[in-house]
Length: 118
Image (cartoon, rainbow, N blue to C red; front, side, top):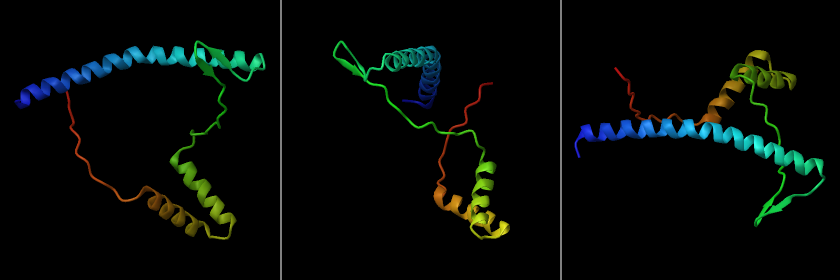
């Protein structure tokens, strides 16, 4: 198999992925709407769940996760907590940076193809 055939196959796979993503986007949106409607029905009728054609559908409670904070805000909040417990502001910022680096772990290099159309 020559490199040209591999490049053509890569291009066709990328095209297929884009096509499938475009098809899945509205389906995911509709699925979310239907799940909301069914969940609302279960809650409004005070039922523990629904059985339908061999499937048991139960409402699942989950915790809402707030992911709207930026990295800088998170670092500042962490430094504020450390300052509250007696560290100086300068030391608390440095400790937060070290904790973040420790949680990340060592960096690993990977090779990725940069494909541009011309």
